[in-house]
Image (cartoon, rainbow over all chains, first blue to last red; front, top):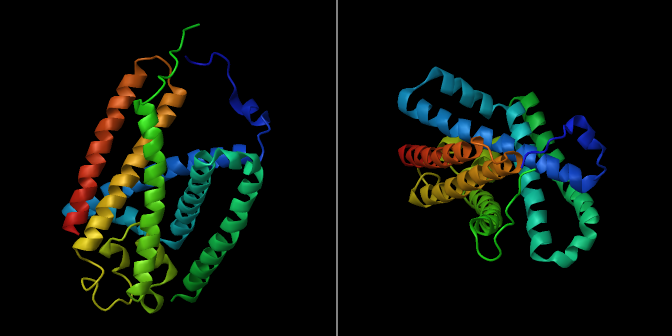
Amino acid sequence: MVLKRNVGLKGFRYRGGGPMWAWILHRVSGLAMVLFVGMHILASFSMQQFGSDLATSLNIVYESVYFQIFIFFVVFYHGLNGLRIIILDTWPQTLEYQREVTWLQWLIFIPVYGLTVAIMVLNNISGS
Amino acid sequence: MTTRTAPQIGFSFEYFMWIFTRISGAALILLALAGIAAAFWMGARTQLDVAALMRWTFFPNPNHVVNSEIPDVTLGWANAYWQIMQMMIAFFGVSHGINGLRVVVEDYMGHTWWRPLLRGILFLLWLFILIVAVYVILAS
């Protein structure tokens, strides 16, 4: 069944709050990872077997610090949010606290991600 | 308005994939933790920068740490143990990802001819990416 009405940007008026944005970020980061991992596997294959210039430059982009900052956000967020989903699904009585858990997740995410990015950027600037 | 069949109660493909998504997700987290712990055990604290440690954690391939201060990558970092770890990460990661794409397809596609076509394409993509990944692991 296909929805006949066109939702468009009005869908964002659904005020789901933190858990809604967690779901959107989970799906977008998952799609980003599928695209990245698929391209990276194919690029590594053609770099290894054919020495393709396009694949080599693609892998150089993947190894750059800016891309790593992005991919670390995507992977770490998806992993942490997935862990939250596993816990809430396995013990449904914890669903009562799902809004609090969503905020707790950011409380874990921000220091770990921020520290890692800070170290990577500082190393990149100092050139070590 | 077209009708929609209710999901089957009991053990079905959707239920199996629901369980598989959770098991493979948890397995990927555990494999990443095993990778990061073993990296520190093998001397990552003095030999790797954070970016190389991150690449190793995501996928323990010797090419990911070749541009570091490790004296000999083949000693400890490139062997059958890490090849098996890589194959497990590749299998769980690719299957988890392709299943995620399948869920997106099931969410947005109705009873159109697109749906069986996309299901078939995703199945072939899953096989193709898995074979290529195993080839890259064995040849690197």
